[in-house]
Image 1 (cartoon, rainbow, N blue to C red):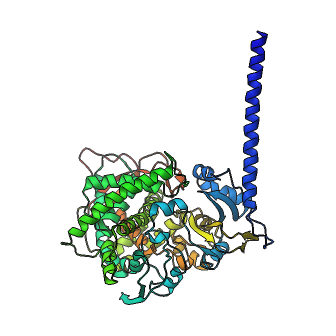
Image 2 (cartoon, rainbow, N blue to C red):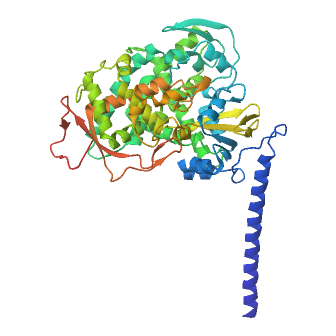
Image 3 (cartoon, rainbow, N blue to C red):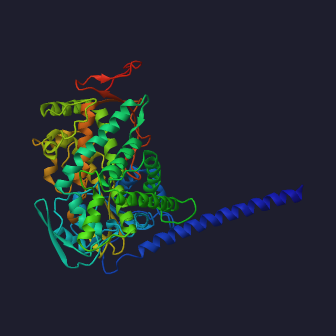
Length: 557
């Protein structure tokens, strides 16, 4: 017995020693990890590095960021201030909030900072995409061949890094273009793809896709998952309208599922290990590339029966005009990028729009009154193709206020990434060369002094009478700002406006759960359960179209 007792004591002592050793090892390694990044401060600058935590070795605070969602930024901002350091997705990062701080970063493009996406995004999007290109060419592009107002896709921040060659000259609408021969092809033609004329041609197609989708939602006997269906809608819009692919429904559904896996892992820890998110993203990209190649080859063989030029048509034709044949890999990367730009962020904003119309029936009714005044309140059964035009939508002032308020309060993405080119001062701290900086869009909106009752959904804050956003250029920036303001804002707002018009005129919808779901911010802002909603169709007199066996049982919008 004594011997056994000694053995037990010895085993417990060994276990305790192991635990103490592991604890000490973790503590020492974490301290060395903190010192490793403290040593990167610029010795020539007397200012300190921003306060904050670098988390654990290698993974940093990525786990905290994924689990805490919106609380990650807000809790650290309260503890460390508007400028703090952290370590996310394999990179040292300084997160920045506040209009003046954001202004310095956005206006410091090419001198202080340069755009660089996280490594996982760069690898998964592919080497031929515009999003992977950086450098002085973007500044020249902005000065030369793309309009400053920016027409484009989704919440897409576009930039490039190729040497200027000889310039070709042309015109898109009233905008004079100078198109460099040696730019990535996507960059050369974005101005054509998203010109006013192109958007006008896309509009009836987008409207039909939205109408068909809402009819399908209303025909479902059960509630739908709005976020998931909004992703399907924006994916369908990108594939059918922007790219002009005639992919069978079954194949399109499979491609959508794969694309979801791809997008879910675009922003992941760049560790190529079995079962890691990064590995799943790479696998999804490989499957997508095969599907896209098949669709591209079929499209190239069938050129008849189209009444407009889609984005892929323009990509191909523009390359021929400049004496360059796009390789299949360039076409695949270009189409992948276009879908990515239209997909998750627009689905997020669409879901937020529906949620706010559910929460605020008075806003929906005021929107319907505006549509009635403009003769746009139509319903059930009639596609009404051609009813909407860009100038018609531009004249809907309250609708514009609603979309702006959705984008203020529910900005799909947290902010934008930059890489520091040279050490500079920000809010009393040094921002060291080589570090990454992320300016926070959502937190800047939340803390902007120009907005009254910042947590209240109030579209009238953007009305002509109040115009709360007029008192500060960088207080409201849902599409970024500076020389790299989002080129996609006009198409993003176009899509949201058409969706709002169709929701108000052809649908009645009600929340299918007792309470509204919690919001998460990763990878983009969306409800944790997707937002369960039951849709009903409305006829041309705004009367509900109900199956004979169905009755209205609860209060609705």
